[in-house]
Length: 488
Image 1 (cartoon, one colour):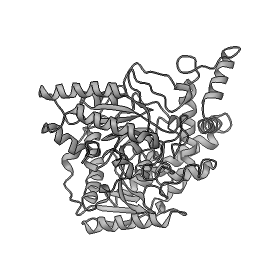
Image 2: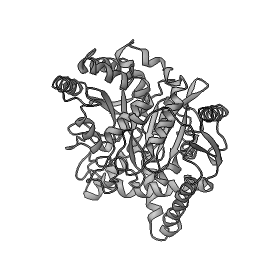
Image 3: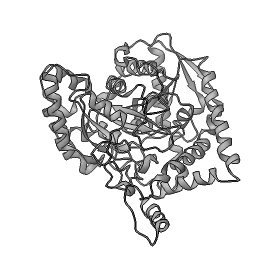
Image 4: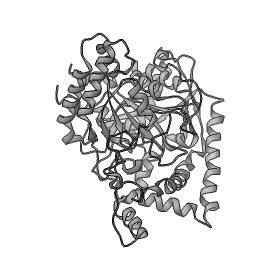
């Protein structure tokens, strides 16, 4: 088996046993990236020289007996998460050459754990999109079929992990941007509870919705990554001061007695039959493993899509006001300051981001604030109340992640509403602030399908335990796209 094809846990074991060095592991990954990137475009920046320096430092650290769980493990970082001295573009021309002077907290924690960064991954511009086609530098491609999208906005991270270009990756999830591409690329993805993982150093899209989380090939790998990045951060005012469990140690495969709710509202009209069948079969599998399946209802789910597309653009309108070329980023010259700001934002910000800024500005404007934004926040409260009430009946929920498998590049790019509907099964979780985990559960038309498990606030441990039990009873993770074997 080629080194890049190992899981994170397998790579870690071989490092511990001194069967391989981090330099060897990292070089194998970099060689594989070079081989597949022309077809995939999962990375915006490959940090080969830095990665090998970090790998050598990790080997030295291991020799001195100071290694930790992720020491020497090559990982990738979504390009919306700032990295000191490494370009962070947010896949936008406005930040094409921006080099941050500091690391995001999640990056600092990975560095403290001895991880190796092989590069920054492609994404929808400013994390706004469901297909990765809004990247100013061209879309990433799905490694299962390069004519199809990898999902978005964290499509580059999902594609990189699926194609074995990294042993894990970080993404962000504002309305499904970890879970949807995880489903479409056939990997594990975690959207943590809001406040579980620090947002410090994450370039904000919608501050009340954004969360960083990991992608990985297996549930165990994802659990190890979440352990490393989770925890209180005084630099993030929304960070929760709640102890972080040892997630990987709780993966005991036992789901007996757990009550798993199946919300009827998530089997939406227009869902592809193959997707629905794969999800139903996975839920039956959980029953066979000893869980109790309960039909439940979350009636306000039907309002999640319009609520999200008022609240998220409104917050984006405020957050993205800073990208005007005045203090940093690219500036387009003009006759005066206001001309320069108008030119910079008008010429360098992409169409989808401009659309959302305009929607948000309108929703917040005088005369419309009460009719749109305030009303949306009230309905958001009702959506959260749905979840609070359902936890009295069940321990977690099982549902589809995406109503479709990966769709062809260009299929929805001119139809914003159709594109927005790609996230109809993931948006409510962000509005409620609860955690979600996606685990591969089958294929439809030879493309991956992901089961979404939704949990109580700060109960990622139960979700991971159930996902792991399901994974161990199936062989889906053993299937790989052909790109993963290119340099075998």
